[in-house]
Length: 105
Image (tube, rainbow, N blue to C red; front, top):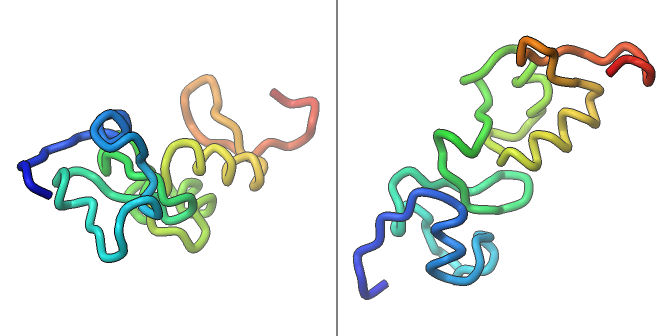
């Protein structure tokens, strides 16, 4: 890269390059080269802010760790997909709870 970049979000990566998925960058590309707070989702490959756009194994509650399965870090969208697949929902207190039946929302 010819100019020094310090991008901080998926949106900034997309604005700069026109795309934001790690697979669209050259082989060997490291997202840290364009922003120290960036990382890529282990499930879909989207480049995200490590701190406010991703969920991390071992850094959240036990329910989050169960939802993440074998992934180290995933973006918000992939976390939502994994959460639904494991029958978790957000409670009114913003806590992850296992959904008991289809009628419980």
